[in-house]
Image (cartoon, rainbow, N blue to C red; front, side, top):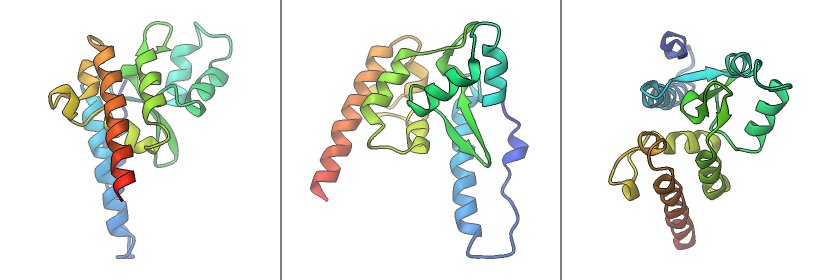
Length: 160
C-alpha cells in the first residue's frame, strides 16, 4: 500500500515568493516517500482504518489516539495525515512499541515531519544505517540511537 507519487509533484504557482517554500516541502515529502517506499510505503488514515476495522472495535478512535499520543510516525501530506506502514504489525495493525519509545525520546525536540525523516536518514549511532532498516531486527539499537540523538540535540541547544 503506497501513495501515488504523482500526486506529490510540485505545484505550479505564479507567485515566486511561494515557489521556494513549496519546492522545499515537495523535496522533503519526496524524501519521505522514497525512504519509506522500500518498507511498505505510506498509507492514509482511511487506508489504515480499513485494515484495522476487522481487528479493532473503534479503529478511527484508536488510530487518532496513537497519532495524537505520538505512538506512531505520522505527518501531513498536503491535506491528509499519512503514516508509514513499516510500523504496523499485520494483520491486527498494532504499532511497533519501539517506534513509540523513539517518540518518547525525540517528540519534544523534533516536529512530526522531522521525526518521520529521522527514521529514513542515515544515523551516526547505527553505523550510518537508517533506523527504518534496523527496526525489525534490532529495535533496541534503534531506541538507543533515538536516545543518543536526543542527547546530541539537547547539547546543541545548550551550546546555542
